Image 1 (spheres, rainbow, N blue to C red):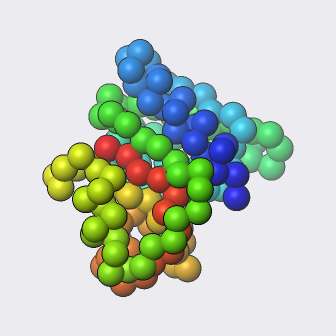
Image 2 (cartoon, helix red, strand yellow):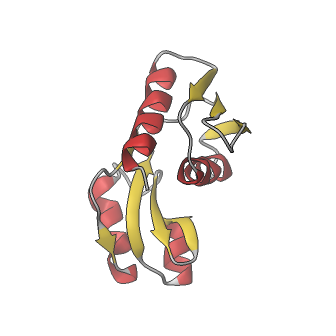
Image 3 (cartoon, helix red, strand yellow):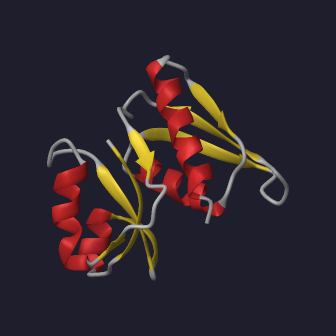
Amino acid sequence: MGRRILNDALRSIVNAEKRSKATVELKPISNVISSFLNIMKYRGYIKNFEVFDPHRVGRITVELQGRVNDCRALTYRQDIKAKDIEKYKTLKLPTHQWGYVVISTPDGILDHEEAIRRNVGGQVLGYFH
């Protein structure tokens, strides 16, 4: 799945946020990265992103908003049941008020709130706050 690629992309976003950049370019890309960014966009952590040439090496240009404090991908496999998502969230996120854990489920890539609502578990991809 390329968890290392996802981790490199997320760290690039955090580093660009710390330097107050307006945009960041991510290379190489994958469908998992674009799904992760879709969740970040839906939750208001990034403004927009655009995928260029997805069939080859490609790149993604992300417009930053200044809200991302930290985002990480887990490089190891972490399975999680639907009933344990809330406990995992309290361990990884700094507060109950903001931040999301992103989970790869049989229903697709979801954040923890959507996974709890659908009552599905899966593998933890990463988190952002």
